Image (cartoon, rainbow, N blue to C red; front, side, top):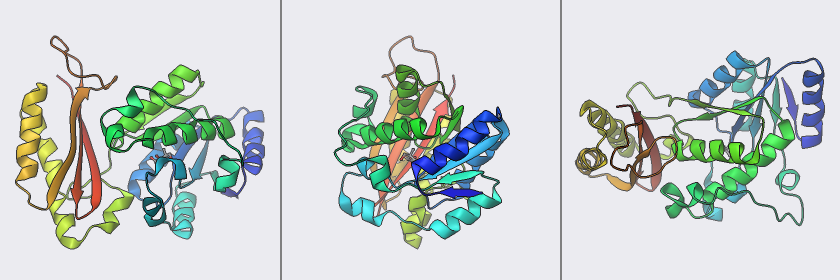
Length: 279
Ligand code: PAF
C-alpha cells in the first residue's frame, strides 16, 4: 500500500494505474476508521481494480473550530486497517494542498445543502461538496463509495456529481451496525456507558417505524418521536421523512421510497441514523 502525503504524488501513482487500463475506486474518509468504513472499501474492491482511500479531516465542513479539534484521529491504526483491507493507495494531504493559499472556490448544491440537516449545520454540506469535488479532481476515480448513514450527504454528492458532469458512479453502502444495533460511527467512542446504552433507541425507533408498514410521513414521525421520547437521555435533534431520491417533502400521490433521517443528542454527542422504507 502506497501512502501519499501530497496530491501530486497521488496523481502520479494513479496515472500509472490508468495507463495500465485499471479502474479506480475512491473511498473518501476523515479517518478514525471502523468497520463501517471497511464496508466501503470492500465495496470498492469488488467493483474496481484499484482502491484509493483519502484521510482528510476537512476543516470547511465543521461549524466550530472546537468540533474540528475534537475530531478523533489515529493514523497508525487507520493505515493498518487499510493495508489489511487491501487498499492500494492512501492520500493524506495537508490542508494547504487541498485549500491552497488564497483559495476562493466553493461548490454547493443550493437546495439540498440548505434543508433538513443542513439548516441546523449551516455551511456543512457546502464544505462536503467543496472537498469532495476536489478529491474527485485529484483522484479522477471511476466510482466513489459513501455510506448511507449520512443519507443527506449521499444525496447531495449524487446531485453535485450529476450537475457538474463528473464521469463518476456514486455508490451508496448500507449502514453497518454494532451487534446491538447502533450504527457505527467515529463519534460512538465519545458516548458514556449510559448514553451508549440509551443510543439503541435510534435503531429501535426505526424498527418500529418499519414494522408499521406505512409510508405516511405523519404516522412515521409520530412513531419515531414516541419511541425516542421514551428514552430520557435522548434529545431528538432532527427528524425528517422525505422522498428518498430528491429529499423533497412527501406530496399526495407520491408512491416511491421514503427516507427517514434521524438525529439525536446523547450527552452532547450527536448521532445519526436512517432507514429507507419502500412501499
Ligand atoms: O463522510 C465523511 O467522512 C466526510 O463527510 C467526507 C465525505 C469524507 C468529506 O469530508
